[in-house]
Length: 575
Ligand code: SF4
Image (tube, rainbow, N blue to C red):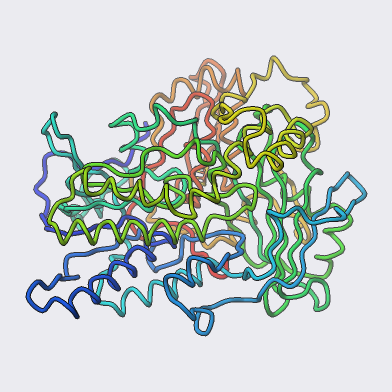
């Protein structure tokens, strides 16, 4: 029997009053905290009689250390950072300024360089960074302001008021610590805190677990397109000098994906001959046997890529989902007592493959709104709704509006996508109509009976990568390089509503795709003679790198990712 991680009912929890709780210490959450502190400082300097305190402003971060769970390509468009901290370049950990970029279309053995780099992928002036180092630095800035960052604390539940007339978010419950696999309290048991907050700000990254609760509770996505996602699987390599310059950026389309799948690769030259490379596979592919970690391994075997990496060494691994859905998939971002930021809201420009600058800007706008709420002592929808207006009149909307139909255009494959993209570029993002509809990615997955048994044109993408240990790696070898660690004796943090579906239907209909799409080998179908198909689902939750792919891509939508005991997860460094 699987016991799932959820707060224990009926115990007394410490109550803590809070003005603002920011859930998630990534770029959006940290920018929000920093901007809020700046505004409070300015206010206090000019209003000696109505001082505002930072004492009850908290950032909750589930990682043991700030930045440890942050992963991205990453290229930073500095626009929002220049607004937040003018002159930040002088002290921030930036690897290199982009000096050269190229886009290639790959076939199995050849490459074709696009004669002109498409405008969205022109990166001169952007910076190659390691997101987790950058966020660590930003976290240091927040700590200097006196705002408390609780590391190792996950937000496990939202607290709502019971008032049906004016339903609102009133706080966040943090994770219980010291619960064993069977759900019993261990000797080190500590109940989670109830942080009763005036304003709760969700900055959890893509497919946030509290954001999901909030969206479901208030049916916030009813007028939005379904959010669509990709999963980026990344490796960091040390290569011999001269292969790729610091600040050199390479994007590829095509192989190993066929024209039916959406996705592409990046290679960014950092300092000290470190290369960030990865492949984003759209989580809307048809064949359940496709494995995104395998896609990256196939990509590295292309002669062009293999030559760049030859003689090098893979030093880190990780994975993370990213929201692709664009402007039409953004739900309302503010209401009674709450706001949603960054990737949790879906602020990603998928044409540019960038979201960090939008996350930071959304954090700043939310801080300005929270500041007004604190001054007025009013965090109702009327006050926090200003955040919605601020986003809509900011450059976040300007940027996302121009690419509002981008990903939807690719729902029918690469050629249709290129046609729609071209049309959208000359019509300011409109294309054939103002709003293209979208289908949730998991609805594209087809049953095995409807697919060629040998995989057809996708055969090379299917099944697990074996790995040669030099250029390519099997999943467990890659996973070792993510530094992932969890307390072993705790309930599973992957909640499967009905494991019977896994054991009786999914195994037959889809061949248990969780084994393939999870980049960390968390899901396993083990032999069990008592099951009708001789197989039973088994989980290795300690392997989880918190990418959220399973929550997104499962064809029955019965998997929910909830935070494990705070402090557990990947240990990204340089990612
Ligand atoms: Fe990602 Fe889910 Fe696998 Fe964890 S279990 S690594 S969230 S797919």
